[in-house]
Image (spheres, rainbow, N blue to C red):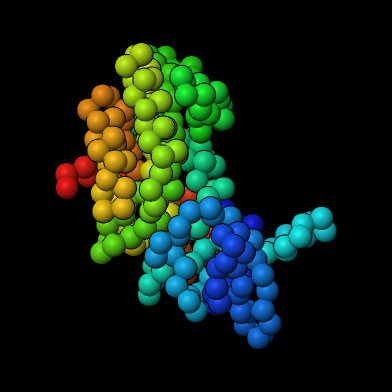
Length: 242
């Protein structure tokens, strides 16, 4: 799975108003790019960081550029575009990369479900022997000493998703929380108890109730740096112990 090519490298000047980022290009010009991330982006917006933008030729767009990747530390790259993870997960599932979710005949996105009137990111059906799988996708970019943490800010919405998944598991369906690890420096995923202890507590309750926790890391960078490949390539462990 590839980002729109070619990617344009620059240096981050600042992110502001959540959806805007000023970037210095190699020719000395400055552009304002769309920042497709409503979260805190903790650790993913250091001043003067190397960033990579995609460009659109759609004349109706207000901003030509979209911020896609950032170098958070030397040789560590993160994808900050939160419109990507659902497609990354779906692509990996349909290609058989995610062994835990192999064998389903159909995949639908944004299916309504649950007592709290949610929409599940991916609904898998048509397996010969397993119940339908309800898959909630989360993007992980917060890295501390090689450990990935979720969430990077307090999330009442994320708690709602966990309650909905627990209800599906209790009803005999497969309920899956799928962490898309969009950071090359992350080797495991943990609940961010230091940021949202209520979420961490509920995540552990969810696992005990039968919610499956999966995490797969994206490629993001080749030997010579980012090449636009955001395919999921390998599983990493989800660790619940404090």
